[in-house]
Image 1 (cartoon, rainbow, N blue to C red):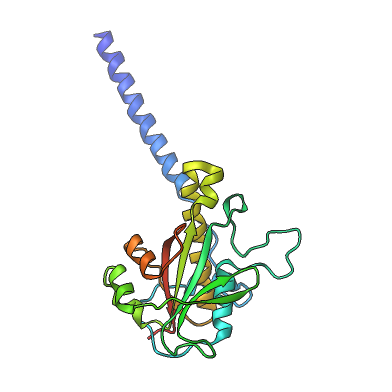
Image 2: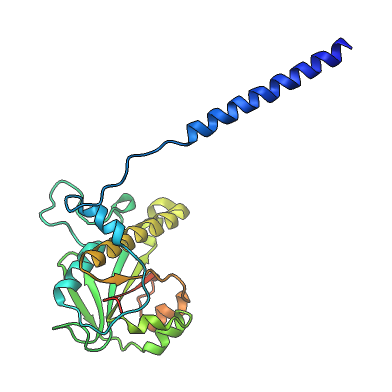
Length: 231
């Protein structure tokens, strides 16, 4: 009888303890944070608030200044950087495997002809490439996402994985994708600041898209980001 009473008493104590700890855990997990203030003196807050992914673009032309700002934000070199970080984005071991290409679709950018370009961050310039892009092939390689062809420009984020994996081994692959994520977010924020919209497209056939763009063998596409004014 005493054993039964002892067991029942222990069970009751266990239940009471669980309830107490459960209540404490709930209270510990619920911590109200200060409200986010969206104001003119907090520009980053405003950009994060306004950032969005859109898949409908108008045919309004872009300017060369807008293109310059977008590409610089993506992976450009800091102005007057000496002893601090030299790029607008971080990179594992400063390997910088990510590169950026620009596809201008038709007469959609002032002073910039339709075509395919490679952004050179060191000189902050565009290298025009002798590659004829077929819109239908791009759309097909991106699994028939037709909205890509509506945008005035398409920014393609690619990477040379060997630049990072040669130092970090297989885990370096993860670092490359992290690097590309920084580039994508910077493009989102700069597009928002310029009154433009974009969307990250990761759904595509890697091999077909690389062939369509005639990318050098070490480079592999990671992100496709059409950019323009909202429709």
